[in-house]
Image 1 (cartoon, helix red, strand yellow):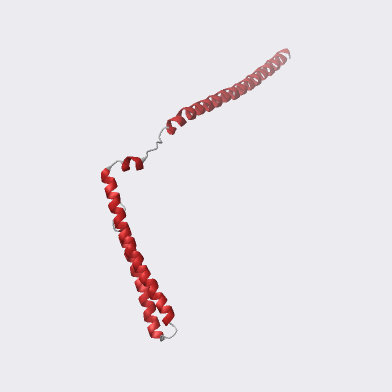
Image 2 (cartoon, one colour):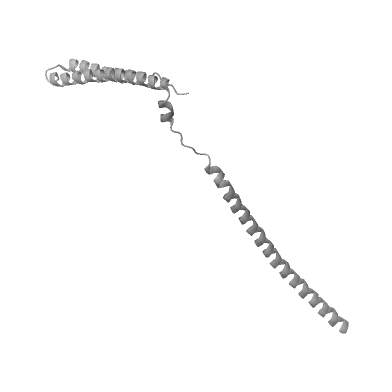
Length: 147
């Protein structure tokens, strides 16, 4: 019986020691995980801290108006473009003015005109307006072509 008691007590001590070792190992694992997580957070913060200033240096301000105004060819070309633009603007305004006068005359005469003449005048006004719009678009977009 004594051997049995000794064996049981040894087995009990062995189990207790094993359980204590497991709890120590578990606490060590938690401690190691905490250290690794802390190290990763510190490394991430350092990475962000050192990379953000590198991106901040990529912007600059250039006064292109000052640069271009000091080039004589640019000034002469800009003057030529302004001259052409005013000519085109006058042409387009003249077309729309004539369309507006056509419409005012139509409004005055619409009371006395028969239906077929009303239709013809309306169609003439609409087609003139569409033609003027196309002409304006053509002149505005004629020189500028997207890549």
